Image (cartoon, rainbow, N blue to C red; front, side):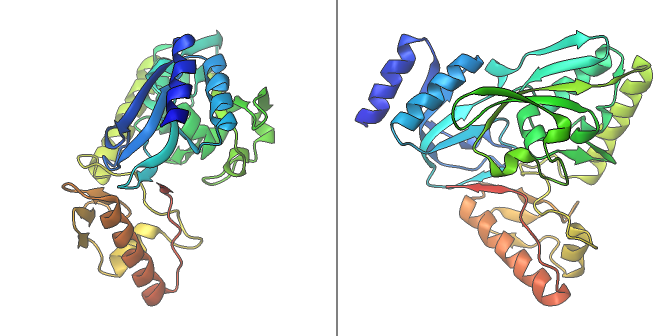
Length: 302
C-alpha cells in the first residue's frame, strides 16, 4: 500500500484526480467487475504522461479505460492502476469547416451529435456505438457499412517512451477490428476526423434511423459488451450460435440474448465467471457442430 500512498501523494501535488479501491462494475457497460487499487482521472495530456511515468517507475500494471464498453473485468478486480479517459478528457472542437478534433475520452455518440449540429456528414453509422473516440480508433469501430477508417484523418497518442506523437490514418493499419495500436503499448489521446458538409435535417434523420435499428435488433435494455464475437470469415457469429440452438442459453446471470444471439448479456447480477463459462460453452458448441472457431471480441481484464 505504501507504493499507492506515494503515488497518490505525487498526484495530489499536481491536483490530479484519483480514487482508491474503486468498484469497477459502474465503469463498464457489462456492469461487472471487482475493485482496482487506484484509478487516476487525468484531464490533460500532461497529466496522462505524468501518471504513466509514476506507473512505470513503480512497475505497476495499468489499464487505459474509456467507456468500458468492450471489456469484461474479473470479479477479483484489477491489481494495478486504471487510467480513466472519460468526461474529464473529452473536448470536441472544429478545426475548420469540415474537420473535427475529439479527445480520446469523448463518447462516439456525442461526437456524432456535434457533427450533426455542425451539418457534417460521415459519422452517422457510429451513432449509438457505446464507446469513446479512443476505443473506436483502437479497434476501428464500425457498423451498418461504415468504419472509423472511412472518416479518420489522423490520431494523437503517447508512446511507450512517453513521447507525444501524431500519425495519419494511412499509417494506422486500420482493418476489421484492428489498428496499429492493437499491438502497441500506446495511449490514444485524440483523433481528427475529415467529414463532409451536408444537410443537418438529413443527417439527423439517418442518425435516428440508425439508433432505431440498434434498438430493434440489439438487446440494449440489458448490460453487455456489445457483440461478443468477431465475425468469422465466411459466416456470421449470431447465425452460427442460433444454428447450434444456443439462443437463451444461461449460466448464472449471463444469457445468450434471445433478441440477438451475438450478444451475451447480464440479465441479473452476472459475474465475470458466469460470462466466461458461457463464452466457453458457445465456442465449444459452435466448433463442434459447425467447424467454425469463434474469436471473442470482448477484452478480458484480470
